[in-house]
Image (cartoon, rainbow, N blue to C red):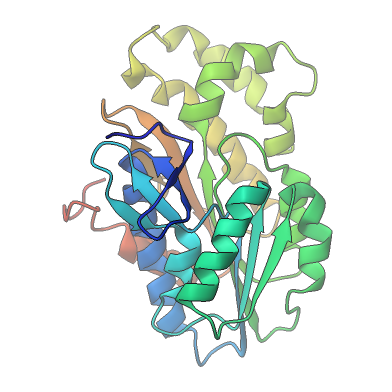
Length: 289
């Protein structure tokens, strides 16, 4: 029986899991490949290596169309060849957090994990106090909100003075597409907060007429300029080599763009790793972009 996307359903282990669309498996494919590369390549280069998951979820997903179960990002991060030295999982929903804690305890009982229950924006100051700050430290942060739930100022606090590789799911096709007119009508919208600027407004207005209602293929012409603003903002956080075009576009069943996986690193090696993993799609297609 297909499940309803976004809801919690009982998985085979008896714990709640999140029902997701098949495109979530595509997203997690790239996350897994990047974390695997970093875990091997960086294990002897950085004494302290932290993995941060700001919207962690229950640790297991159920695909709506065929009920198959796939690991969520927390369990993927714990499955790498060489584990990170620190794990930080943030989750706002109490039931989801309880399931995550129990799964992690079963899956990796010897691994020390710090849990943060609540709004990631509120908890960032506490989390950063627990992060290694020396030059011998590297963090990888996966930011996977369901909407525009993470403020740019929180991102600034997380990354300031630290080597943090970012894998950011920018939900332009899920949230922005549905709410663009509303955001344009607000003086300080969630999109302004997520981007840390209002520079997106003239770009969105200039392309607004391109979008044809009901034809998703035109949305990319509106959404991509907004992602360009986000990339510009990342450069202000010392991500000086955020290359436009290196994002991975994740699409739905109709091939319409749902969101971009935006990657940023403060070191060129991070971008090399990202370019390596994006060369092969989740279906095995080489050079698919």
